Image 1 (spheres, rainbow, N blue to C red):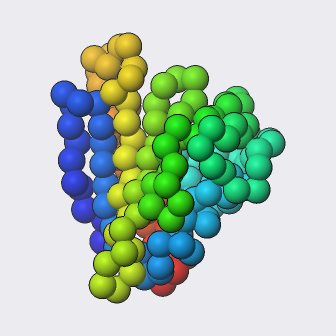
Image 2 (cartoon, rainbow, N blue to C red):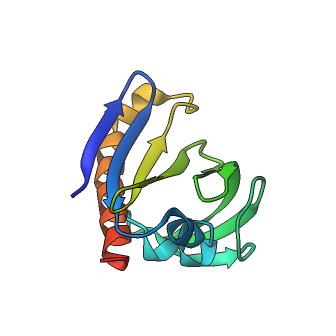
Length: 147
C-alpha cells in the first residue's frame, strides 16, 4: 500500500513511500534505464525514450517522447542503488530514494517543484494534487512488477 509521507506546500514537494518486495539493486537498475521509464509512468504522459544512455548517471541527458511533446531531462542527483533524480527545463525534479528494509526496499518517490518560480500558480492549477496521484500510480506499478 502506498502511503502519503508529505505534501509540503511551503517547500514545494509531494512525497510518497512504499515497500517493494525486491532488493535496491534490482529496483535501481529499472529506474536508471530511461528506456524503461514508460513502464512506471503514473501520469500517462511518458511514451518512450528518444535518445539516452542505457544506464543513467550523474549529468546524463535523456530525451523522452511525451504525450504531445518531447522533453530533455538531466540527472541531477545520483548515488548508485540509493538515489536518482532528474529535472527537465520546467525545473520539476523527480526523485527516487531506495533503502533496504525487511521484506524488500522502501522506495520514496518525490515530485519536487521547489525550484519553480511560480510555486503559487503551480498549486493553484492543481499540479501537486495530480502529482500525488501520479506518484501513487507509479509506485503501484513498481510494486506490481515484483509481486
